[in-house]
Image 1 (cartoon, rainbow, N blue to C red):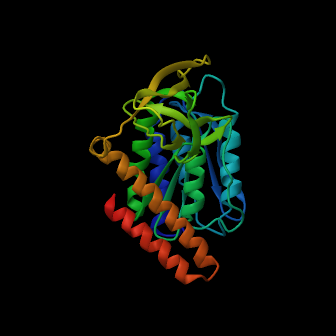
Image 2: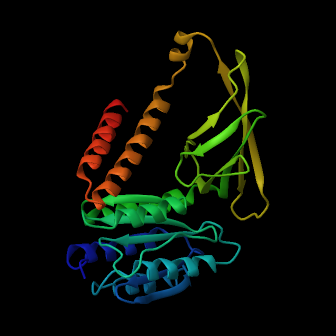
Image 3: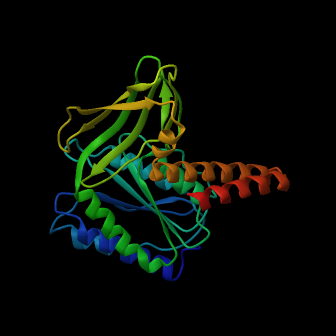
Length: 308
């Protein structure tokens, strides 16, 4: 119901804009979620005979009831997961301005990625952000509803530049190296190997992986840190391909050499990660009515962000 007025009007326009941008042969479905999930359009192949009908149905979106985000996301994932093998680039676009007051979503599967679009200042950032992170998707914050159409157009352009699907990075440490923690969102460590899901990759995309490792520093010199492997499929093909790179580190007894080796970009990434973790701990402390601890965490977060 909170989507009434300009928000729902721009959501209709954004849906129509997306339908205009899609290529013939793409498959699209549309669902609305309030207290229940309503099918606006079942999975439909886009073409000259269906595009106008789909755009007409998008105009039937209306604002009412609560925010059953779990039901909406689940239905979207089910439909996308059932797409034929010929359609390997799979995306759920989720638009919401509220909190998941029915039940929050809990992740995705079947190679489906979620683009979350939060409208206004009161949307459920934690849930939308979690969906985007767990599915290797993206999250947009829109202060003004009129930004929706341009964001969706940008999303479709990125999907059209997809060069790999079902991608992940796996880092295997060299002998004597132990991976302590995968800091990048979504990273997991199992059997001393780090895996970071990426999903679909578009041309020109850059991804960074941050992790903590314990290394052997007894002898000075350069040595192998790990092997990094990118595993992916080419769109339309179902055969895994790989690219590999060797990561190295150097042990030095010179403090000045160590200082000079620090990369400002990496320092910025680390500072942002530490600030985000401090903000999370502050939120936990606030929920426990421990304002003193929360203030300390917020101060630490602010200092890290200033340095970053």
